[in-house]
Length: 193
Image (cartoon, rainbow, N blue to C red; front, top):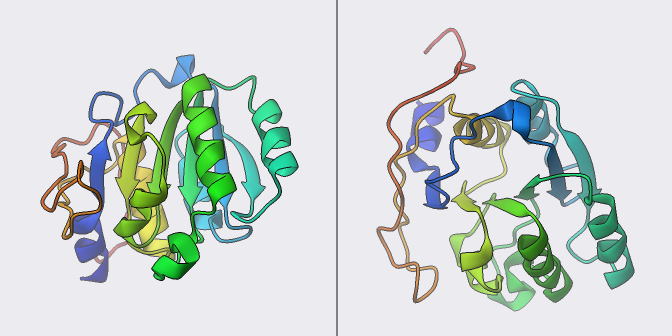
C-alpha cells in the first residue's frame, strides 16, 4: 500500500516534453547526488535502464567544489540532479544552499537538467529561474521506495499523476502537476503488486 501511495504522489512540475526519457542511445547522462551517501537506491534504479556516470556533492560544499563539478560534467548532455538532503525548515533554506542554487542555475544554461527534489516542495522557492530546467520532479521523501519509483518515472517504468498539495511559489500553485499515464518501459516491482 505504501508503494502505491508514493507512486501516486510523485509530481512532475516541468518536463512533460522530455519525460519519460526517450532515445537513450543519444544521451550521455550524469547523475549528481546532492547529499553524500543519501541517493544510492535512486542511482541503482537509474542504472537499471541505462549506463549513467555518478557524481556526489554536499549542498554546503564550497564554490570551488561546485566549479570543479561543473567542469567534470562537460562531456554529458543530460544531468539528473537528485536533491537528497532537503530540510523541512525554512531557516535552513530547505536544504538548498545559495551555492547549490547558483550551481543549478549555471548548469541549467549549459546542459539539460532534470532536478528531482526528495523532500519538502517549498524548497523549490530556493531555486533560481526554474524555467531554465529541463525537468522538475517533487518526490516528497528520501526513502528507498520513493527513490526507486522516482527513477522509474524518469525512464517511463511508471506513469505520473501527482498534484502539488501546496503552492510552492507564485508560478507553481497548488494542484500543479502533469499527467503521463502510459508506461514506455519495464516497471520494477515487488511480488505483492
